[in-house]
Length: 352
Ligand SMILES: Nc1ncnc2c1ncn2[C@@H]1O[C@H](COP(=O)(O)OP(=O)(O)OP(=O)(O)O)[C@@H](O)[C@H]1O
Ligand SMILES: [Mg+2]
Image (cartoon, rainbow, N blue to C red; front, side, top):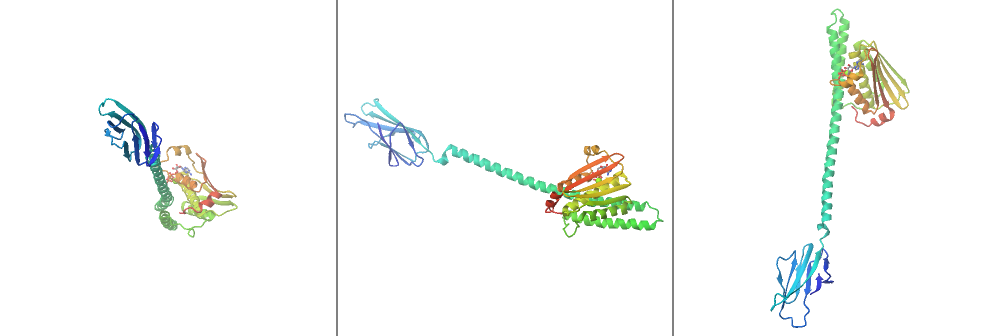
């Protein structure tokens, strides 16, 4: 009974299933009935299941028209019956598949969902990474300030306090030594303030600070001899090479904390500061012959002891190696190895 299917003016073979492209807008289905006698009293009705809600009474033209059928699977049915005998029915049907545009297909929607999810996940990861980087930068700056405060302000104040205590416990008659102690305290206070200011604002510039580590360590040794009356031997060996300003600063701060620790905790008779230049590294040793200590106890309870921690962090900053060796009753030896290559690249870091 179904003769022809025409989609957008093009005839399609009326096979049991008709496939229509996504751009198809007009659909015509031609039908009829083959009878040898008169067809005058024959009537038709048809329905596109899934699209039409009710049967449509056919017009005399015997064509079913449809426009803009949405994508999907449909079943077209046409029935013919005689007016005189409506029970006598002949029917025919056709499967119609209207393909969707690619952007309405389930795989495309799935791809979009996956892509959106990937975008959301990617931007979340990016944000997390940015926050981590910022957090690391803040943490690193906070640690730098804490180290600098410890090694400048706190140590400087401790030193001034020791000088003032020595001054007040001294006999009034020794006025020359009294004045010396007060001068030392004044000088120490001034340099502490200056160092603290530079540390807080990161003001140390290349021209301000010498990069001659030997010269700086000798100055520190002299300061300790003057203030604490302890023997500090400073020696430089090997073929010196230029260290970056930040590497010199870190090394000097490590040496100073090592000396303060020896004075405060070990009661040594002698401290040695040894710097040795080798072709690929510079090694600093701080050796005292004082009381020594149990290194294991320290790792179990590091609270409120920031000196050694700061030393380690400073060594890490110049990608060096830190070795602490101490024996009770024999003394302490601290070794800091600074690789030449790492120092050369560290020269481009922010200096403090
Ligand atoms: N040269 C040393 N001789 C003996 N004991 C030492 C020596 N250096 C460190 N110590 C021990 O290690 C501990 C930790 O030293 P660290 O410098 O970390 O902290 P601290 O000197 O106690 O306090 P601060 O935070 O002011 O430096 C000291 O309290 C001391 O017991
Ligand atoms: Mg200390």
